[in-house]
Image (cartoon, rainbow, N blue to C red; front, top):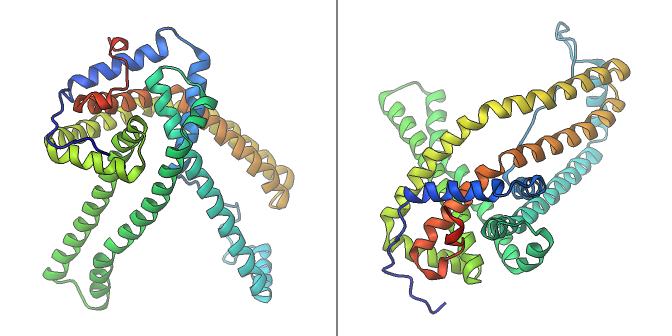
Length: 341
């Protein structure tokens, strides 16, 4: 990369870019309105968010008035003790399958991040075309996400060590003023590390990814370009991160009520199906055969609906970072300025 990105100053106000991004998001979805476009953006965003993770809890019903575990559970425990090698092999196989699925999710999330970016830039979602056009960048970003995910996890765990040591001394000995101060300091250190990891993740998705796409370079080269821009105009990036934090909080509050409505709409049928399955099959293998596929289908449909309904919010945040980035030079022009009201 021969271009000199040092001594750049952003010519776009991070506050004015908010209005421009809102106008562009409105244009994408309402000028003209296209139901098919909403659904396409919903599919892409669903795949983009595959790598973000998530969890849910499933508890088997049993009579809590009994002091002993159910007979089936005790029998299962005895079987596990007598077939320990088989149990270890099964658990290892399950972990490998889960790891493989997670890696697949990360891969498609990486590829579809570029598809979403191209869809926002071009105000059109041509999934197959964008998927083929971003093969190299998608692979590079996939490797980055795997490596960064591992580094972030290890860093977060290591940052918990000071707090764990302080808690250990408190449990073994007693509370003292020094230990309390140490505990508070170690907790603050942990949150500071998490905050730093979040900042790196946000900068990667908001700026490194579009720099990769616009300059046709790999992720580490794009980070080098971004680092030069940050050093030349640190204040702009600080303002951007602060404003995005505030905008993120506002978007969360805006989405609370619709999310609750959608949750009720999809949760009630799921609970009814679960109740009917319990009555019909009691606690047996058939319960899981019925519930797990139905739960996966309901979760997929609800996630698709969620991402489709709130696609304008995602397009706003994506276009907001693009409009700020283009203020650093013509190399970063992406959104057609005539498209922004």
